[in-house]
Amino acid sequence: LAKTTQPISMDSYEGQEVNITCSHNNIATNDYITWYQQFPSQGPRFIIQGYKTKVTNEVASLFIPADRKSSTLSLPRVSLSDTAVYYCLVGDRDSGNTPLVFGKGTRLSVIA
Amino acid sequence: NAGVMQNPRHLVRRRGQEARLRCSPMKGHSHVYWYRQLPEEGLKFMVYLQKENIIDESGMPKERFSAEFPKEGPSILRIQQVVRGDSAAYFCASSTTTATNEKLFFGSGTQLSVL
Image 1: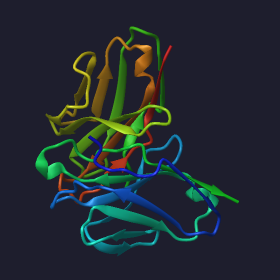
Image 2: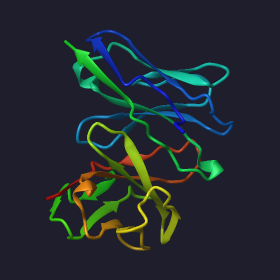
Image 3: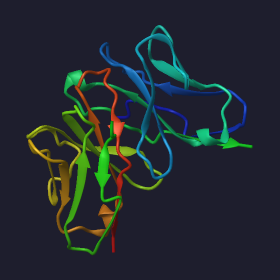
Image 4: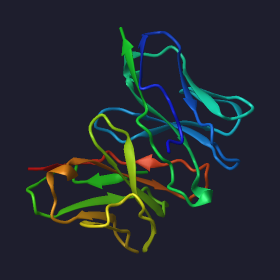
């Protein structure tokens, strides 16, 4: 049973804003939402994490509606170097289940 | 402050041989996780360890695979009698705690190729 659902792939031109939405209908009260970025032949890298409303850092913004059943990662003005796979994860370690389950992610291709 | 170190970066084994993958967590981190990734696939959780203890091995095959995180030294993922299907990238990650808001720091992985 998948914990998160996100698009398989997305394309964008350089300079555009990219929004990747993730569905997590069964999110639990203690769960946080975390996004990772992975380049080819490298391990994933933490991007941003949030619990509710909006979180912003130097890399991205994360929008979480009140019901927390989805979240949107927003990348402002993407460049070619943002081409990567983006994973949405929902943390459930307190429940004793497998920590940080990764799905297949969203493959973002940025085009010049 | 060195990140998570994995070695070797690439490992080639013939069928039937043993593969040993090493992972040194970030300084101060006592929790280690191993993930496996096939080409074009997401990461699949294998095992979660704390110092000298296996906390969750639900994602690790019951046969041929084992993992340890001794009191001293790196965490080791051992695959005995490797088969072609074991060819994959193996990533290690570490964290300081298991709180739900804890983020993982990943190494660059070990690419295992079984001939």
